[in-house]
Picture 1 (cartoon, rainbow, N blue to C red):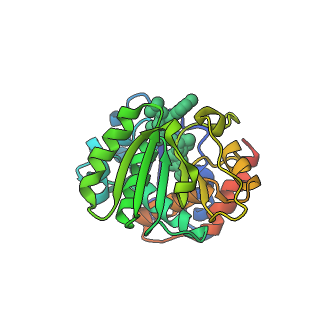
Picture 2 (cartoon, rainbow, N blue to C red):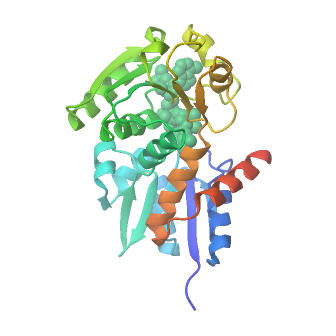
Amino acid sequence: MSAPLYLAVLGKPAFHSLSPAMHNAVMRKLGIKGVYLSFEVDNFEKAVVGAKELGFRGLNVTLPYKENAYRIADEMSEDVKNVKAANTIYFEENKIKAFNTDIYGFSKAVEKSGFSLQGSSIAVIGAGGASRAIVYSALRTKAKKITIFNRTYEKAEKIKEEMSIFSNQTEIKAETLEKINFEDFDIVVNATNIGWKRENIFDIIGTYPKPRKKMKNTLFFDTIYIPTEFLRVSRSLGYSVQDGRWMLVLQGAMSFKIWTSIYPEERIMFRALTRGMKQL
Ligand code: NAP
């Protein structure tokens, strides 16, 4: 009898994660015997070794352990090597292999809105782990210009320094939050935690976009997957918006492909995520 497919997400917190809903829906649809669980862990390294020992096929990794996942890996993709963070672990041939599917998730999610990172000017607000993957994703897809805006300037500067070596075609800058001028960008990304508690990021930054009217269209993209003031206000001013649900689904779909060689139906995951959100 073949072994069940055991998968999980590790983080702290992790019990709120909607990844189990997405992946279990896909396994049901494909008739795969197995389960995707969530674990909140204090000792990430011990938990990874334990999961490997128990016969898990792979793991997703969320806050605050994405850098630990990079450090613990025996082998890693080129992307993980470059961003020094992983959100996917695959146990293969008794090795811990690390991948970063957030990079794919972001660029594909932008495409789903009808925008393209290639040749675009992109503002990335925030300079944490998500920002790093997003900046790298935009660099790899040959964005024209990327500006990282962050409350703590030094963190934006650090990402700029570390990432600029990966492209000589993209201009990359770091700024403090209040320097943002929304009209300068084709795509504005919220990669901060601001919005989960209904805070208005424009009030925190101290400036709002001008109403679109005759101005070019801009995509306001939020990495947060619940409705936020960032998107509500941008939409009301006439701009295109996208929340973080597709990014989450697409990174999950690519993780599933790494573990099983099957790229799942994205809409099955999207529906499961949306259903799961209603129960939060
Ligand atoms: P992180 O490493 O903790 O970074 C948080 C960022 O938010 C930092 O730049 C921080 O600025 C900024 N920030 C937090 N509170 C702030 C405030 N009150 N005022 C100004 N700046 C503030 O977190 P992360 O892992 O990058 O995650 C960021 C967001 O991305 C989260 O909302 C997460 O849910 C989302 N995300 C979504 C997906 C998806 O698939 N949809 C995937 C990954 C992450 P300082 O540097 O100044 O502290």
